[in-house]
Figure 1 (cartoon, rainbow, N blue to C red):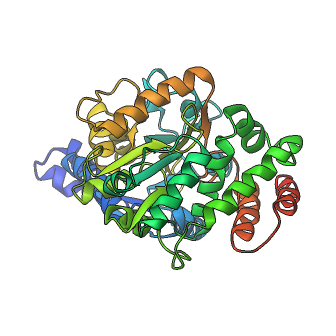
Figure 2 (cartoon, helix red, strand yellow):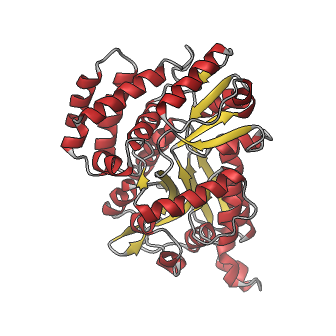
Figure 3 (spheres, rainbow, N blue to C red):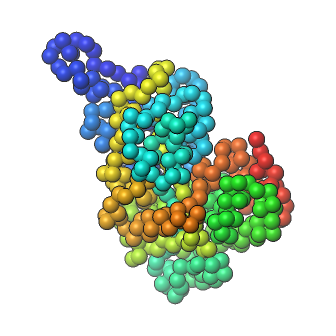
Length: 413
């Protein structure tokens, strides 16, 4: 039983009935299982425990959240949903449409004034707040081992020609040029980053609007050509590798670079590495004015058919958006607070750059949702495009053929 209340006999015995919420158990489904992620979610568990609620952890590893979503669907169908679950992007709307979520407006009294407009829109359904956002991850980062960079006498690349020249130098020096994990979402992360390198407007037309002319353009053929060339710098053991193991290759000096969102920074921090000294965070080539965002949120499910949120659910939602929690969570996770105006003085140089770049991107229209991380499209379209990219990256398919398949995938219903 997820939610337990103190029986009335305790009140009769002289205990304060107002503390009944102390026995409420809050079951939380999430996929934060790597070192930095687990440490970050531990902050939330501790904060909730201090308020007298029992945190029941339901962590599902793997697949960039795909396995967790499968587990969630099974629980909801069986009539036994968790109190809260990690969801993001269009999926929040999908779950809300099924009438299985409870609004949390009672905890969200000032959120609209303290969130980027794009995020505030995502967490609302029919005017009601149904999601509590945690933090903002920038996806279009390139992570570089500082010692490797120094050894070959290079700077972080800002263009693709500079990138490939650096990759050649790293390869000649005995490094794996690009650490990668051959999983569909990681493949798509690289692909969408190359799309972003073609310009913010190109990205929005291709990824957000699914514009057929853009998807079938010569410029998109060039995107696939670039991805194909990046592939030549992977090591032979990349297939199926988890993202944090690829990050570890950069941390240990086995590899020179990795394309990955800034949750990777949590792994560097967990290993005691310092930005600027041990590693460098740099926008991927050609994407310095763009910011692909990935925002994790919790949604809250109806408990035993109740239409209102429980005290524990409201406490969890309110805690998530407090400035103190936003700061502590992101310091451990490698992200930046989704709440605007949080003091950034304790954050490292990478986080400060991320925050500054976020604000700049919002102003110039470069703050765009990540497709690879469930922010830009629903499951059907995202899955179809992922299949096209993964097929391309695991075959000898021609770029022009891939573009035609991409255009068809965008029409998926």
